Image (tube, rainbow, N blue to C red; front, side, top):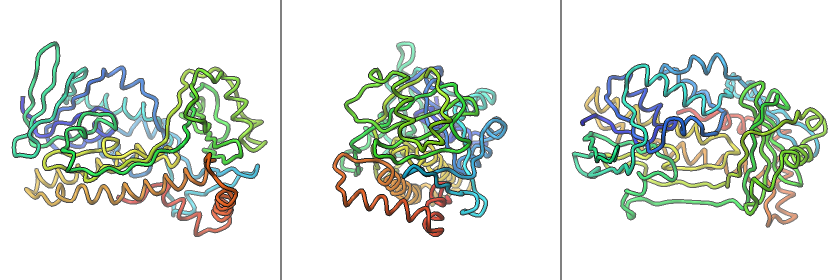
Length: 390
């Protein structure tokens, strides 16, 4: 088989890139080791920047997102038992974010791709990229006990932090940067109405908490926890009690409890691999970078990578110029590092670290107080939260 672009990974970044390429008349094949049902069962982020929603529209996959998604014009920072609203819409000249679950976004992209007859191959075992440093790259995979080969012009690695693509980059060709945080997030999903119509980020002496949602009837809640804990140690009742302790009283009173249907602990890390281009192979999304979820940047950074790579590939095929793909890594990393900085900063000011000194804590308190009393500081927060321009 031959195609123009092989995309390894059918998460949001791979599917979004595939749809943009398909609509531009650029042939592509998506490979994934998992089944479609497994991919659609993943529980992930749900805060979309305006740039991400525009890309979904560009991929002709945004209809349900606009019908069912929840536009948010702000969010709350809660500390010292009080709420302080960050007016995203007012501080950014009319920008907002969209609450729409990553699972639903993925479903929309899969449905659109299937409806248009573009090729996705699931349960593709032992996917391996080859010869991407030369002029004739190809990808092999196993299916039904047979090894298959797809020749191509380019390979896009959209297969996540634990995927195969980055592992095939020569060790001397890539540099990695990493910070591991000394805590995790215990998260649950429950079919209960959210505590507030907007997200609430809470800084409390017992640890961080986040009140989020997937819809008006499905809530996503998180609390900071130690990394040596297990989800099984937390009954639903214990979780609800701890969440309420960390919220201002008026929010705690509004918490509607119910049985959770998903519960997990996610460790927090910052990770960047650079460069993101290796001749005819490109790293996209989590294959190249990971951010703590505090700033809601993971999915949105993957979308911005797709934007830059799609522009480069479009220029290559339509204008016969490699200027865009040559600039891909520099353009993507410039935005990546700004988002990594923002996510690190939000994680630092909102969480309680085990080695925090009294001085450090006072600095955090001063930072939060400054954010909520300085329009300039609030504008910087809002600008980053809604997403920097591509």
